[in-house]
Image 1: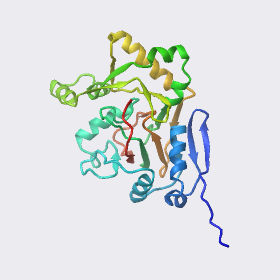
Image 2: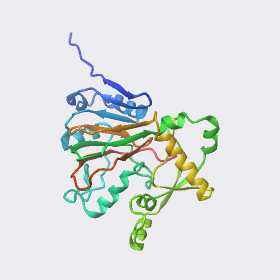
Image 3: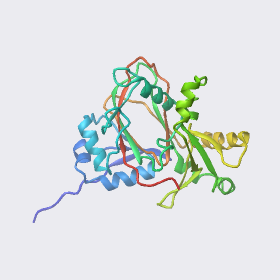
Image 4: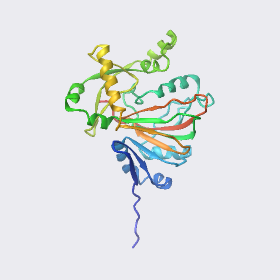
Length: 281
């Protein structure tokens, strides 16, 4: 009688409220046998870290597809993988300006009806200094709010706009720049996302402009206060990169940002993204 060996997911918690380190081999990850377990753990923990996998581009795309499909990236060629870099050999001026917004807390896709479900980065070139990627678990941050605070924010809507995020790194744009950014439009999103799983998470980040029905001062207090809560301990994790590391996160319930680094150092991460299926609700 033949015995079929079952590949099991091996993981350890990084922090109690965010992050798990995956201990399986590259071969086990690419077998496809761990797809369901990885997706379940990603939703539970927000961030998954794979140390020293040294994925090639082809392997990273394959792994991303195993986890539910690879959404088209934002690069000029519309391919499945994209360079996160301020190096002009990797990206044009417009993309570099867009990437500067990644230095501030955000969720990818707040201007889209359906955001990507998750993203995956693999480190190729380290910065000379700085450049950690930070994450914050907005599921856990919502869960831990007092009931009175939850009652105050449930049902609130927030206007999101791409041009607001650009002001973080370019506070004095030309009128031409501002017109270009504002042409991307706005989108009204729930402050609390009621997920299809029944869980809830906070929808925050640098695209948030104002809370509908609140004046600008109160809007700022609500949005900045919740962001301060969500990005504090114990919901925060900072990943210090080594070449070959791969990190993925649940974009539907996790804020992220890059820490400052030398823009001329050639820092390079390769990104793939998981196709989204759940609209903001």
